Image (cartoon, rainbow over all chains, first blue to last red; front, side, top):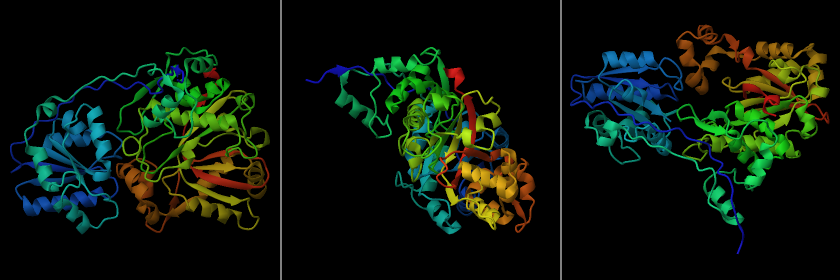
Length: 97
Length: 438
C-alpha cells in the first residue's frame, strides 16, 4: 500500500460573510417611480431604453426613468444611489455580464 | 447589491444568462443569497433595439418564466426570511489536508482546481519549510489581499500560503523573495475578466543573475527554470490566494489565454540595453532588485527592426492595431533599442515613450466607438475626467491621442539574434522590492 503523506492547503483565507438584508418590497408599482439604471456596459443603454418603452406601453402608471451611472461600473456611485433613494421607489439595474 | 441593501431601495438586477453561476455566487458571498436577479439571453452587445425588446418580451433562459413578470415580482413580491435578514457565514481554510497517497493528493489538487492542470510538486511541510528559509518574514505574516474582479470579496494570504504555491509551481527556494514581491503587489495574475487577460512580470536588478534568470535568447520562452516557475507561482498563488479561478464561476475569460501559464515572466536585459532599467524608471536604484507587475496582457504585435525609410509609419501601424483601451508595452530586443536611437534619436526611455505617445493617434469618431472605450472611458469623460473630457470635445475626424503617456512602458529583452520586437498590450500595476522580501 502506498505511503500517505501530509501536505499544506494552498487556498487563501476568505473573509467572514456578513448578512445583508434586502429592502422591503413595494405593495404595487402603480404610481411609483422606477429607475432603470444603466451600468454602461456593452449596449446596456439600448436594452434599458427598450425596457422603458415597455413600461410606457404596458404599464403607463409607472414612471420609468432611465439613468446612467456616473462612472464605470467597477466604481461605486453614491450620487446616483442617493438620487434614486430621494426621487424613486425602486430600481432595475442592468445589464450585468 | 449596494442600492438594495445600503440604500434600501427595492432592486432587481438583470444579467445575461451565461453569468448565472457567478452572479449567484457573488450574491451569496455578499450575504444576499436571495437577491432578486433576472436573466436574459447572451449577448446584449451588438443586438438591435428590436432584438433586445424581444429579450424583454421573452422568457428568462434560466427559469423559463417571462422576464418582465420576474422583474415585477422581484420588486413587489414579499421577501422570504433569508432575503429579509440576509445570510452570513464563516469559512475556514485548514492549514493541512488529510493525509493521503501522492496519487490521491495529486488528483485532489486537480479536482479542486488548485492547479493550472500541469503537474505540480506536492507542498509537503518539508518543502514549504525549505522555501520559508529564504525569507526573514514569518510564515503567518499577511502578504496581501487579492480578488479576481472588482465585485468579489478580497481573500487574504500569508507568507506560508505563498510558499505553498511556490512549491507547487516548482520554484527553487532561492526564488521565493521574487514570488513574495509579486504577491505583495496584490495584483492578480488570474483576473476574471471576460477579455482573457494574463499578467506579465519583469524582473530587474542583481537578483536576475543570482537566480540565473534569462534576459537573452529565448527569455520569454520555456527555456529557463526561474523564469518559468516564478511566473507560474504568481499564477497559482493568484488563483488560490484569491479564492479560485474556475471557469464559469471565478474565471470568465471567454477564450482564455496561454500567457497565463507562466504570467510572461522574464528578466530585463539591463547589460545590453541603452536605456536605464525599468525599475530605475519606477523609482528604484540600479543596485536594487525589484519586480514589476503588469496586468491585462493580451494583445501582441510584432515586426522586424526599424526600416530607414518608413519605420515611423510601421510603428504607427502597430500602435493603430491596438485597442485604444490597452496600454502599450514595447518589448524590444537590444538591437531594436539601438535602432530607435539611430533612426529617431530616441536615446532615453522618456524620449521613446514621448514618441509613442505623440504618434499613436486615431480619429476621435473611431476612438469613441471602440466598445472598451465606451465601457470604461466614455463614462469618465462625460463626467469631466481629463484627459478624456477634452478628447470628447474633438470632432469625429479630428486626430486624438490613443493612450496616456503614463500608460506607455518600454522593456528591453532578448539575445540579439535579430531585431524582432513586440508591442504587448499590458497595464502597469506596480514595481515591488525583492530585497524587502529576502
